[in-house]
Length: 159
Image 1 (spheres, rainbow, N blue to C red):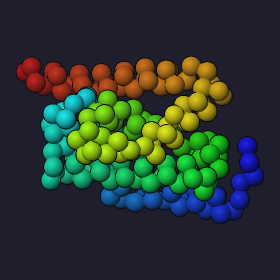
Image 2 (cartoon, rainbow, N blue to C red):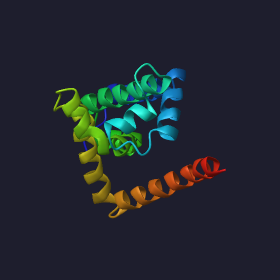
Image 3 (cartoon, one colour):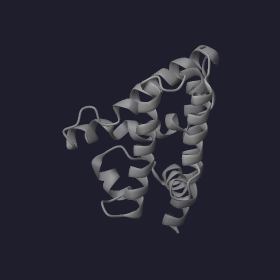
Image 4 (spheres, rainbow, N blue to C red):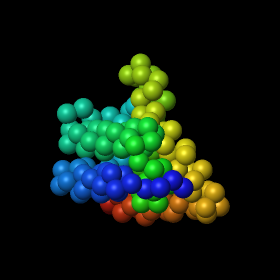
């Protein structure tokens, strides 16, 4: 673990403050609650079609975390320090991972969200080294949460 500078502390606090910005907070809330089961371009169109509020929110969340990952990947903030204080990017990546290949093909952009992907791989390794099995435990918890969120929707649809 490297020495943390005041500049890095201030950068981390600034990134945290940006996450609290009202519109980004709305976008993050929407993303966490609605961006599930997106495995194909058709699912993407269903969940957040172009021009929709959902599409705007999705783009806000993804661009924020891609930007943050770029900062961390370039070493502008100590990675251990950042990982100790952030994990939301991992959940965002888990939600977009099933459709990333289709997006990269659709946009002819093989590096689309590559900063986020690279950072999340290192975060998983960092987490696994400190807490073996934690990545899989979190994935199980997320799956259970998704099932709990989908149950009322399925029940309402069948009524």
